[in-house]
Image (cartoon, rainbow, N blue to C red; front, side, top):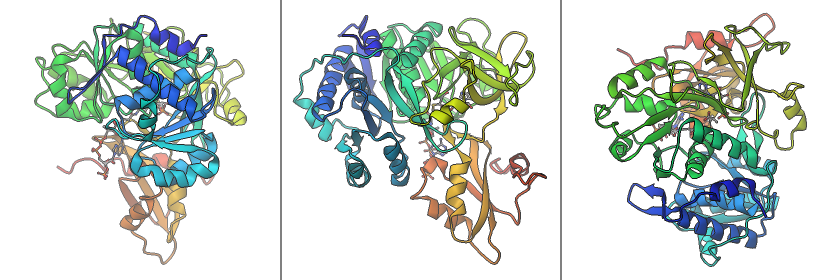
Length: 505
Ligand code: MCA
Ligand code: AMP
């Protein structure tokens, strides 16, 4: 039997080689990975998870949580990671839409999750970030070998919810080959080998930390230091023993504020990679001045995995996302009619290749609307290709805010705010933020005679929206600016409030 993704991971494994270390000094070898993922796969099977069933997971980051992802791959299940910041109101939608067979959550969240998941036909098990929980107990009595379920290249390995280009959160369906082909390309493009040790400080419920970081390490037989979250001083302390790091721009913004970031401190590091949001050219330059390293910026999406990357050798140009990866075709088209625009002109970025997802879960019309007839996926990002072939992202055609690498879909926040007492209407925008890149900002119009205040709105959103989606500021205005068609001019709002988060000097 063959399992497209896991067979590739298995190939070349040295069981005694280190796979994961934690800061307190615990260590999991590749042999441990094989045994533990087998035990979890056995437990999933006992719980009735069949090939193709979804397994929704909302747990804190831990080596065991990563083994659970691998167990799903081995058991032929579809892994569905969920941001730990999601509220029950948000989870209700994901679980209703994905209809998982099994939900795995933190022990403290079990009761709440049972109330929404059990009526929808799911079983709920728990896992904490310290090797405990009911799923771990079940796995303990399972054998440490497992007959991997046969899965082909096009079978689903994961569904990741994303705001996509329009509308409500949609489940991006990613196949075994979407994940494998992209990870193999990145391993080779970025020269990962078994000698590498990655500082892994990203969450593992999104493409960046889960697939880009973890799958690349697995395919290279390399190792990683697994940190529960990003802490600049801790990361700096680890650098002399590591070789590379992947991060969102906020990581780099925070690192350059530390006087401990020096050439000596980073002497053992061979590669710093940035993605998920635009890295300011200024951050790139400052990082180079302090360390001598040029950050390698790449560009991707949940739906497409990674599309472009600056070169490993050759010029890493600040403010660009480099070249289309081998096997990925990228073109820039007129957003209206889809006709290609000449190099140097701005248009909609479209991509195709083995990296591009299989469509949105149970949304054939939405899927069809995002693809051109010849199979290119319309990213919603505006860009241009310069004379040397470097891709520049110059804006977003989609109404999206990216804060610290997390995507926020303004419509979702506006819908929540518009329902609140005293609110007539709202517009949510992202404005430059020194730490998060963009800060979520709500511009609100009160109903006549109403006195609703910023604190009332923020308090009401606590239970409704994940913390990172909640506005950092709420501003009240008598009216929203509109064009002649009646559409809210968010560009005007972004300009008006562009300096909102600038430090007052
Ligand atoms: C935390 N907060 C945030 C964010 N993170 N608010 C806005 N945006 C955020 N990203 C809230 C916290 O709840 C807290 O609220 C306050 O802001 C300050 O928290 P702080 O301790 O400073 O935050 P942190 O815990 O240090 O987290 C910041 C972070 C983290 C390290 C940048 O957000 C992070 O790890 N981001 C990575 C996201 C990621 O992996 N994206 C990849 C998506 P309060 O104190 O008021 O309670 S995949 C993707 O985009 C594609 C495929 C791609 O190309 O990679
Ligand atoms: P997600 O929906 O979380 O997969 O986020 C994907 C979006 O993040 C892309 O469509 C881009 O808008 C943005 N993105 C990812 N990497 C970069 C980058 N290096 N520069 C600019 N934007 C980026």
